[in-house]
Length: 312
Image (tube, rainbow, N blue to C red; front, side):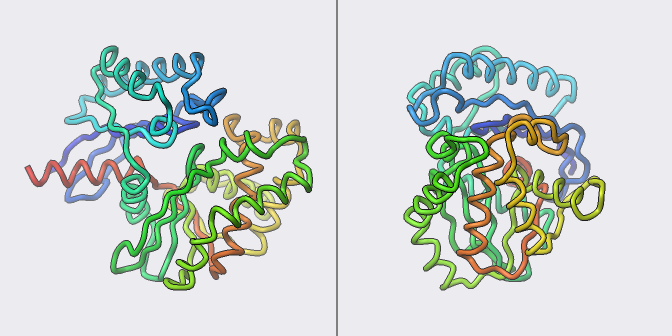
């Protein structure tokens, strides 16, 4: 049976809406996909609150999404909030206002469930035959999912999202060598456990789920192919060439990034610390290949909702 499901992922930087027809626990057709760059963490992410301007932008985005959902005649709506809403003192107030103004119920999820949903989404777009680790760079947190053909082995969530790292360490433009070193030292401390986990599971593939990796893929295509082409589900990088693209981003200035059509405005500055983070993770994990998946949490939410509907 085919069900039309609307899934909302309320992230720290971007709110995502996807409406799709799902059948037999497979995404058959995407009816609508939209993202609004709310920047929910702006002005408050490291203070543990949603700033008033960001609060209002979030409510306005949900109003837009509600109109799309109503027109689509979706059978059900599922919505989750992640790092910014988990940690904000006024996160509960925010989702209460969403419920009151749109009728949409938002579930604030922990990092462990966030990782599970990301895995379910990536599984729809990438063959997980080899030992792999999925990396999802959010604004507030980064999720790592060690997995393979036999399922998930371990899920870890760390509070080192791009918005957090930028607020803590990106103090000059272009970013200084001192700031880069400070990020690297901080990540070595925070991710020390990740190295031992990698030694245990020996992942061969790093899969970056959407977000910053979509920007990496677009810049990679421009640098080596001259023009970016549409990526429907996944994209494979040559590791040395990806490293060169990451270095270009890290060395770039704000005006250069702002004038680059391949970099979304919400990522103009955060893409720098995301590049430092990605470069360090690739080195730490010692993977042999890197892939980008366009599917992530919101697609996983669709699959979970379809599973729940099937069980009813």
